[in-house]
Image (cartoon, rainbow, N blue to C red):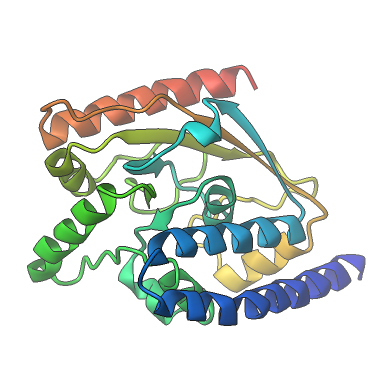
Length: 251
């Protein structure tokens, strides 16, 4: 009973917060000068408020979040919650799957972030996506990419897609790896969402939690330095996997 009341209250608060920011974000999106930075800051404001409503608490280790500048930001991917966690920590732009455009409200909020939409359904659009990513990587706002391409269960890193690093190589942009993990929920709710569980039932269970604890480890940035796509991908994944293993051993 208490859990359902808590979930209902949080849902109402999340919707109120999103709709309160939506008109400001839409007006901001129409004015071209400074649109990218304004979109990133409004997204951060939305994420911080939403994460707080959910009872989220984030602990940061490694580098200072303020040291994260332009270029590419990459992380392991565990849940839709990652979007709030990362956007609450950094001014950033998303690189989401184009299917997210159809998600109610979330698709609109994402679009107002000025994202680089990733369309894996049509290979003939790969060149346009790569050009958009290169342009984004040349700016001051980092582009967030989840190179695993899907959600993991948190017991290790999945293989990385190599295509997302082509733009970083072409733009010679810095890549900042970060690692993300969640503390076990008090009632056993699995915070990683691996897809076989329905999204809405999972989210309702998350809403019913009193608190969510997440840890983010910010690693030193890596430059492409003339590496090929596969070599760079291997360097990044191996370094992140080793740090993830040590990080979890010391937890």
